[in-house]
Image (cartoon, rainbow, N blue to C red; front, side):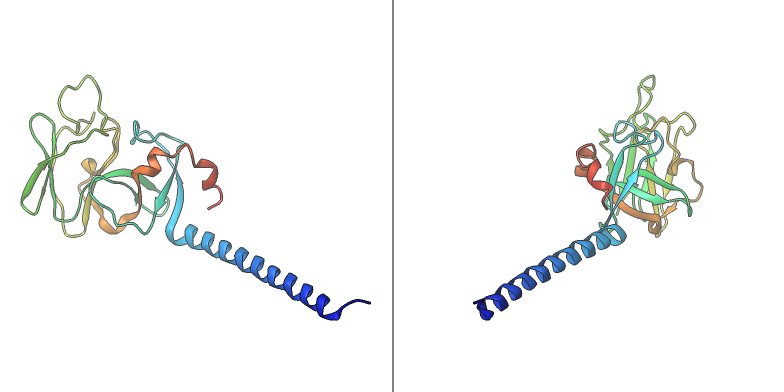
Length: 195
């Protein structure tokens, strides 16, 4: 004879496990939705303006919630269909300029700093600083309260703030590509397809 209490206990136990499993599935799905639409987004790099840091067809992860800081790699919106990946050199109110030798300087709140740019690549035939570009020899820009200054790490071949009479706006920044993402971009490419 079957014990009804034992059968009821097994039924309740299996329903509990099903509820836990269903909850976990919903939580993972909600996390993935939050991640994709509000936090992290994979971006495929196109173009050579960031060569030596990232290359065409590399996939990087953009953090939409991070506050951008000078020196970080950012994704900016140029228009509805075009995004650039560039290095954030200056924030609103900064002055960005080059000296006669070609080094890049930033003046922030009255403090002048010559930028140390180990990430910057330029044509080896130019012996001076890192700003060199085949089209833009020198620049001196003071940013308005809503403007940013960005440059590609491949200074010889980058369409960036040096070419603009009107600078990119701060609110054109879509997100930050953290250095650890750049360093590990080849290790996690398989994962990016799921977010």
